[in-house]
Length: 233
Length: 291
View (cartoon, helix red, strand yellow):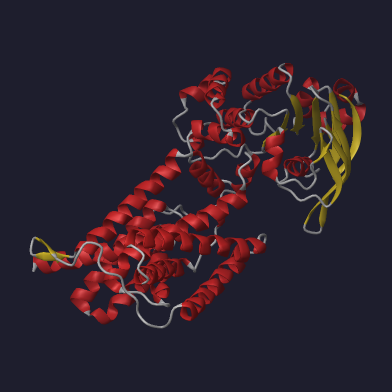
C-alpha cells in the first residue's frame, strides 16, 4: 500500500533522513521506534506532505506522492494524528471533528460524528467546549477521532502515548488495536517501544535518520539489542 | 454643551466604523498569514474611486458599488497571487515590505488611471440632516454605520457558522495541523485577501460622499485602520471593531476640543501608547511562549 524508497529530507543543511526504505501492506500495523531525534516525526511529516522531501520517493497504492500537496494526500486517504495532538484549541470539540472531515463534505458527516461519539463518549459530553480545555488524554482521543473523520485508509500516528498517564496509555493502545481490527492500515511512531511493538505486525528501528533493524514486532521485542537500547531491560 | 459632545461622538462613530472595517481587514490577513498588509488602505481608495468613476459614467449607484467591490477584490487576489504567494517561505517581514511596495504601486497606478483630483459621490439618500438631541446626523453617516454593521454580522456568520470560515480560523490557530486536515492553505490566503479587499472597498464606497477620496486617501485610512487593529490586539476581530471605534471617537473629540490640526495625530499617539504600555492590545493574547 505504501512504499518509501531512499527517502531523504533536510532541515536547512542538516540531513534528518538519510535514505529510508520502508513498506506497509494493506491492513498491517507497522511500528516505527527509535530515540528522540532519530527522524521519526520527520518521516511522518514527509508522508503527510508538510516537510519537503529532498531525495527518494513515496508511493501510495502505486501513485507517486512525493510532490503532491498536503491537502491532496488527505483526499487520497492518508490522515495523520500529529505529535503533541495539535487540536485547534479555541474551536469546539465538534468543530475540530468537522474539520477532520473537511475534504469530504457530505451528509454522512453527521453519521461519522455519531460514530466518533460512540467510540469516545467523553467527546460527546464535551462537544461544545473549546478543545483547549480538554485534558491531555481527551485531546489525544480528539486528535485520533479528528483524523478518523477523513475516512483514512492509512492512519499515521505520531507518539499517541506521549505525556499520558499509564492508564490512558493502555486505553489509547486498546483503541489503536481496535482500529487495526476494523481494517485500518496503521503506521505507528512511538518512543514507547514496548507497547508499540507488542501490538505491531512488523517493526522498524530508526537511528539518526537510518533504518537499522526491521523484523516482525514480536521478534524485535525479543531482540537483545532492541531490549538494551529501547526497552531498558 | 451636550449637543456638541454628541456631535463629536456621532462624527467619531462614523469614521470609527470605517477604521473598524479596515482593522478587520488587517486582522483577517494577519490571521491567515501573520502578514500585516499595508496595502489595506489602497483597497479603501480603489473602492471609492472606482464607484465614483462608474457613477460619473452613468452606471446606477448600487451596480457601481457592487462592480467596484468586485474590482477591488480582484486587485486583492492579484496582490496575493502575484506579490505575496511567490514569496512564500520568505520571512514575514519581507512579505510585509512587499505589501508596502504594493501599496506604493497601487497609488501610482491610481494616479495614472485617474488623476490627482478629489472625487466624490452623491449622498446615498439625500443630505437632509437628522436632528438627534440637538446634534445633527447626516443620513450618509447612518449608511456608513449600517453597512459596517451588516458586514460585521456577515463576517461573524462566516467565521462561526461555515466550515470554510472555521477552516480559516484553524489555519490561524495551527497552520500545520490545518494542512493535515486537508485544508488548502493557499486557498485560505487567497480568500483572506479577497475578504479584506471587500471590507476595505465597502468602507471606501460609503465614506466617499462624506470625505471625498483621491489616489492617496488610502495612506491615512490604512494607517488608522492599522492603529485600530493594534489597539484591539492584532488578529482579534472584536478588538479591531472596538479599536476602530475608539480611534474614531478619540480623533473626533480631539478635533473638537483641542484643535482639528491634531486630528490625524491621535491615531499615531494611540499606536505609540499601545506599543509602549500594552503591546498585545486590548483583546490580544499575551505574547508568551510555552517552552
